[in-house]
Length: 444
Ligand code: PHE
Image (tube, rainbow, N blue to C red; front, top):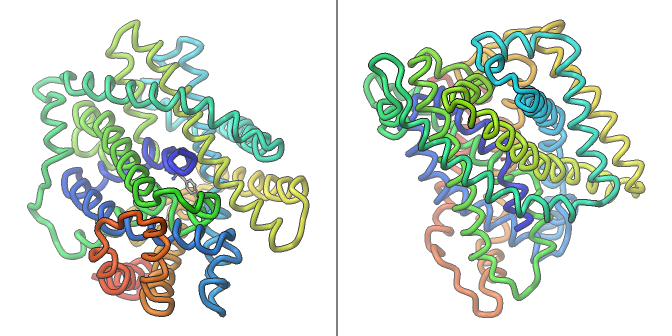
């Protein structure tokens, strides 16, 4: 449950829909599902098993699997370090939208320039970011994680029901001749016209980075969760649950956002990037009439909690790493981490105004500071950590290292053959190719 709480977050609700839209819908969706069932499953199984078998956190676990591989834990630790600041900045956006709806300003939030005006303003985004970061630090410092998890057990099902309801409503939208059902078609049916190899690899790269981000692998976090798992727990069934639940939430979130974007702003609107959810959802809520304001309030509130359980696990990964490595006390490592995130998070917020830049990223977008950090963590570090993990388990320690752990107490390892083929051959080769592409070494 805790691992699923870490997995479901802004990655599913904010990041997945905007990538699916940017990559044109259908094709991204199909590739994503295939990757989840193959790559996602392989990496989740590997990390959770390493955690449980070594009974150690990521910084020391890899070194215990094989001498000399401890560096992989350090490399994985960098990923949450890169993610935390901008994750909290987006958490701040969600807080702002929640407040706007609380004050009954749904119409205002639905206007075309609202989002752009908001993030380009200097002070307010920083304030909400600080509030979100403070909440995250508070939970980590006070160790009140349990309380938040209890609360989110109630809120997550509400969020899921809301997402489902909003998506169904979005399908009934109409704008001129265009209906929600046309949008649905764009979202689910792959459109292969004009598809080039370069474009295909780009979509693959996006989907792979998204998968890592969404199920929280390739950053050591799942190793930590594995180390908490009981020796007689059925790992495979937990893994299947995390994998499925995370995928369903993401796909539904896409259903709630992508068709609506198509209805309101056509194909051009689909490339809006990180702002997509904030630009399109208020419009959907306003179309719901009075009920929309209430739906908006509950929706943004539940998203805040989904984001908080994830940001807590991201910060926890950094903090526990510092504690292990430098023998620091919790309070000191949490304070250092907060100070660092505060600094970089402010830089991220200013990236839309005072520090505005436009950098061409290898995934075909022009990015600001947030996108750059996101790209470095998702398209460079995560595939690299994943590739090295595959080499470690597939070739150095051998897949039996993981298989034996899963099959403890006679539990069944379904998809065992798939696992072996993936970890030894398919995953490392594909990851290597993707890395060449995302480092810009090979240009297709
Ligand atoms: N997987 C989380 C999400 O989808 C984000 C996350 C990233 C959580 C890294 C933990 C570590 O939002």
